[in-house]
Every structure is written in C-alpha cells, then in structure tokens.
Image (cartoon, rainbow over all chains, first blue to last red; front, side, top):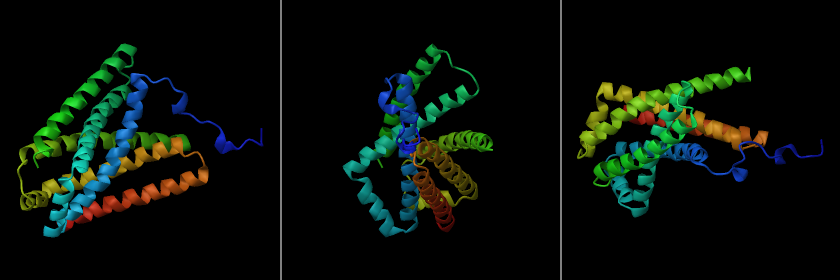
Length: 131
Length: 109
C-alpha cells in the first residue's frame, strides 16, 4: 500500500464518475459562477483604476466595453451574479435546515435557474447593453 | 483545531454573503436609477461619504467572500499538499492586493 502514490488516489468530489442531475449541475454551476465572479471582482477594481485615471482611462474603458467579446463576457458575468446570488439564498435557506425535501430542492433549483435567466436578460438589456 | 477553523470560515462565508446580498441589491438598483450618468457624475456619487463607506465595506466583504470560496475549491481539487499551499498563498496575495487597491482607488477618486 505504501508504494501507492498518495497524490494519485482518487479524491472526492469525483466529477468524472458522477451521474449528472439538476442538483449536482447547480452545485457545480455555483462554484463556476463563483470563480467567474472572482475574476469579475478583479476586473471591477481595474475598471475603477481606469475611471480614477481620468480621460485616457475612460477612453480605454470605452474601447474595451464596445467590443463584442467583452459584451458576451459581461452578459455571462451578469448571469453569474444573479445565479450565484439566488442560489446563495437557496444555500442559506438550507443552512437554516429548511427546504431539504427532494421536491423542494428541485423546485427551488428550477426557480433559481428561471429567475436568474430572467433577471440577467432584464438587467443586461435595460442597463448594460445601452451604456 | 481544524474543525474549529472550518466552522469559522463557514460562518464568515455566510456573514459576507448576507452583507453582499444587501449591498449588491443597493448598488444594482443604483445602476438602474443612475443609468445615464456620466463619469464625473459617477465619481461625484462615489465621493459621498455614506456611499464610500458602503462601497469599502462591500469591497472588503466581496474579496473576503471570494478568497474563502476560492480556498474551498483549491482545497477540493489541488491534492498535492505543497502545490496547494503555493496556490493558496498566491490566491491570498491576489485577493489582498486587489482589495487594498480598490479601497485606495476609491479614497483617491
């Protein structure tokens, strides 16, 4: 046993052998959107840095934000924000020991998915697309 | 010992989550209201002491929440102990640097 390399043993969570279900997908999505939002937080500070720099920095923001690729990333960030926020509320509700019945878990899961899509389309369309 | 550390991180993760929920609600609605604001207007708004205080609190909570979340993911997926410690340290420095940079920028604005 000692000859087995400890680092090569499979460790939980085993994503590669897990049957995908709504619950597990949302759990992974919570982490993925969390990572995206962390990157977004760093980008936000850089945005603040550009604003603080005055004219040249603000011109740089205009250039970047008018790019199609950036608009796509911004939409993904918007979705990440609403999904992570709503699914976070779901997690806090579970932390209080409520909503654990299988039906409730699936229902709240679908509600989170639908609301986060609706909210991100609304917010992106109303606020971010125009500016 | 380690279980105590874990539960503290767990509590802090939730506490910062609640702070972020409330402040993001405020800032996203401000986005709706000040939709057409120009850069000088945004800067003037950020200079308001109440807004600045809330902004700094949000920034602190955001980067702390982000650090705790990323730490959890690193601990789950980086299995080699020495590498894990290096990655955790880099993540810590990044979060600390950007949080401080954000606060300084806001004060200078």
